[in-house]
Length: 402
Image 1: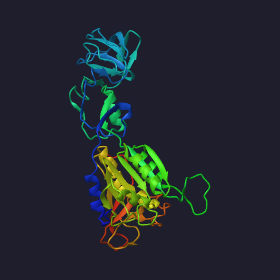
Image 2 (image 1 turned 60 degrees about the vertical axis):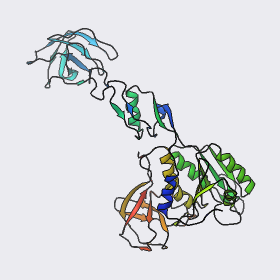
Image 3 (image 1 turned 90 degrees about the vertical axis):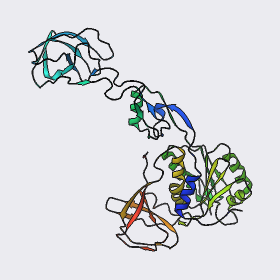
Image 4 (image 1 turned 180 degrees about the vertical axis):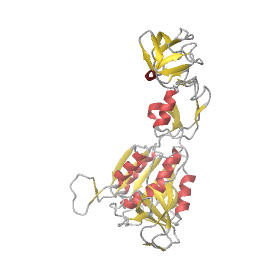
């Protein structure tokens, strides 16, 4: 039988992490690795820059003190060529950004500081220092030096850096395979006519959007009517190859709550069922084989709240992220709030630097208040009345941290 012992929010979060493994490593092309977590540290295979080169368009010369009034122009070095002619005293070579420095030259004078007649140049402005305007060999990184350490979030800048080192493929944690199952005979897809007694289905759309924000595309999304046999077959298919199954609805105590019935038939180990929280009290977390199973309440705001408190950290731990939870800040409450003692409350809210405002419409079926929300206020179990101005914990609905 499925146990229904209520546990706390903190206990539930820790239980999720205790049973969530990091996924195996895979190697992907560097251009497709954005937003992933590097699973192994990478060393640079090259010196970068691989040679001394010019930082700008100008003229390469051998610096002397004092500088001569003019220099003889003896050649040109476009980028992508390799110079062999040596630059001697009183001589310069025309050079372009990124081109290698010729033998004998140690300084570049920018073209804006000189006049040129095709045979010689003369300096007309500026103060030239020895070694100016040169990108030295290995001044960014040396061959064999660590480029990025394991656990690094591969941002566009990180991707560009690795590509700059000639690294074509990188080791990352595999993306989780996720199936979404939505239960409810009363549900109708958006865009269709709404028969009497039916409502539009939104939970799958919320979960797909939330998964996409984490770089995860669900393998399958199914809508199952309140029929045990249909759900049993759909669940069996989902359990084959999925790392995580997200189910909405059918987990409460009604006669048509088919999810609990199928779970109780066997094969699904219960890690916890029911959390002392609002919204989302009838939350199930378990496992069948190596597949994690979240059965979320059917009410849309409960689904969204539970996703960010439990599914979000599980997805991030699977992929090797170091920061697992929503970013937390402490802000003054802009309006007082009364709650039921004994339950952790998660309030849809708007957060600014000045404080955080609980939005109207906190009931679990109301999504209108989640639409503008950029944060969730967490109010502890033992709180009952929280006055305006009280400093509270706020979970920011943001992304992109490593």
